[in-house]
Length: 287
Ligand SMILES: Cc1cc2nc3c(=O)[nH]c(=O)nc-3n(C[C@H](O)[C@H](O)[C@H](O)COP(=O)(O)OP(=O)(O)OC[C@H]3O[C@@H](n4cnc5c(N)ncnc54)[C@H](O)[C@@H]3O)c2cc1C
Image (cartoon, rainbow, N blue to C red; front, side):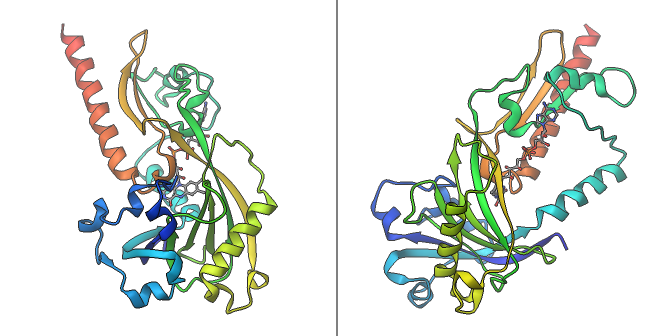
């Protein structure tokens, strides 16, 4: 089991509703009339009683809907298995230029199209060097404690604009993620103990059931982690490019904090762009 369907709660705090400050993760997620209200199954606004269970004085409003929680550690392995079963040849290496990927085709002949999914490192890959891509540093604490299936997030915290509160219990015994941060431009790969303490304190105050009333001391920590969301000013780059020398490159990077949830839609667009490049190649060959 790689994913679970779960009830997701999105809580809007008074602070963010009354000020112009926006959540770095996604302003749209916390809109009182969100774009996804007709899309997500079971979408509803929370009642006063339900809000009261979440420290009502600080919560303005909130909504709930059915969503998906992915255990990425197993999901990515499953995807690799699907690729291998479909005949994909995998090679592992470090590239200094995007065009050099064309020479890695398993047939031995150079490929005419390269799909560039280099994420954050599109900022450092030769032939791309996209200066608008920066890390959105995310620090988390993974614990064994159960959140009783709860997946929730708030529009902000009292600990600064780049600190977040979210709790996600993953499928298949993947533990519960306590988050987090969204620190733009920060490349520090090491968990900061002070941030970790604030993450755990916020999570337990918000969801005391995590430790059965034992406070932060009751958290059973598996590990502390840091990841870098590939943030791109202006949004994802999903487009084709013809390079000098005729190589077609389809770019698909800069998905910030939504790379998993947007992956199927972006992949469909990549297929269209690859088809466009193939067609253009055939037409040119005819001329
Ligand atoms: C704390 C945190 C929480 C998140 N939560 C969510 C969430 O709830 N939902 C969601 O959808 N997303 C979430 N994300 C975001 C998600 O992880 C990213 O959007 C996604 O991983 C981006 O995938 P990608 O394949 O584009 O880039 P990456 O996963 O970064 O993959 C890029 C790959 O390209 C390789 N590469 C780059 N340059 C080179 C080179 N020169 N040579 C060889 N290989 C190269 C890299 O090694 C890497 O393997 C979260 C991220 C973090 C850090």
